[in-house]
Length: 275
Ligand code: KIV
Image 1 (cartoon, rainbow, N blue to C red):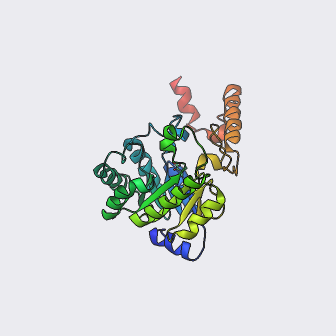
Image 2: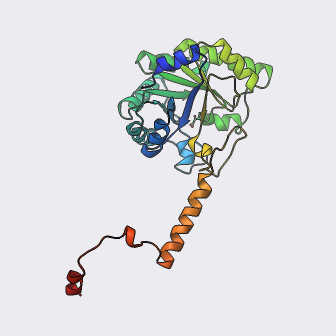
Image 3: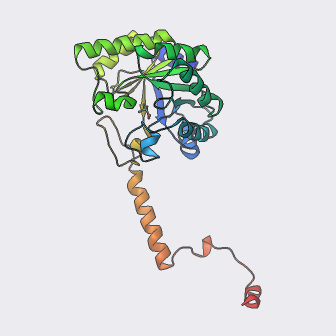
C-alpha cells in the first residue's frame, strides 16, 4: 500500500516507528521500496555520494529533478520526499513554492524537505498552501555548514536546546507534516518528539524519535568519505564491489571471461565461408 502523509500521522499515533532511507536512482529505489521502507528521501546528500562534491552546496534543482525522476519510477509504495537544494528556497517565498512545485511536477515526488526552523515558517506555509507536503529539517542542517563552521552536534547548550524546541514547534505550526532532527542529543530529540504531534525522523538523534533516516551509501558501506558516529553500516558492499571488479579484470586478462555460457553461437560452416 502506498505510504502517504496520513500513514506518517497514524504511525506516530500508534507509536510505530517510521523508516526512511535515501535513494538516488531507479535500481536503488526499487530495492528499498520492495522490502517495505515507508519513505525514500532523495537527499541532496547525492551531491557527495553520487556527484563527488565535498558538501551539498553545489547541488542544483536540475540535479535534484534528474535523480527524483529516476527514484519515483522505481518507488511504488514508499512516500518519496525530495530535498530542496541550497539557494532554491532561501531567496524568497516565491522561489520556495516554485521550486517545490518543480520537484513534484517534474520529479514526481510526493513531498519536499527543506532545511531550517522558525526563520522558514513563511516558506513552509506557502508551500503547504500550494498543497505540497513539507518535511522540515532542523539541528545540523548541512546546507549551513559554513555558518556552523563544520558538521557538529546541535542543541547542546541551554540556549541552543531551547532554540531547537522553538524551531520544532514553529515548523509544526507552519504546517510541516514531519521534521528531521539531525545530530541532536538523544534526550533532547526525545523531548522534542514528545512535544510535537507530527513525527520526528532522526539521524544521529537517538532512539526517542518517531522514525529514523540513514543515507543508503552509509548503510551499505558504499561511501568511503566522512563516516559520522551515528552511522550503522549493515553491509560492506564497497569491499564486495572492489573484489568483484578485481575478479573481472583478472578474468578478462586471463581469457576466462567471456566463457561459452556468455557467448552467442553462429553456424561454423558460415564462419568458415567468411574467412
Ligand atoms: O540529504 C540527505 O540525505 C539528508 C539526510 C541526511 C537527512 O538530508
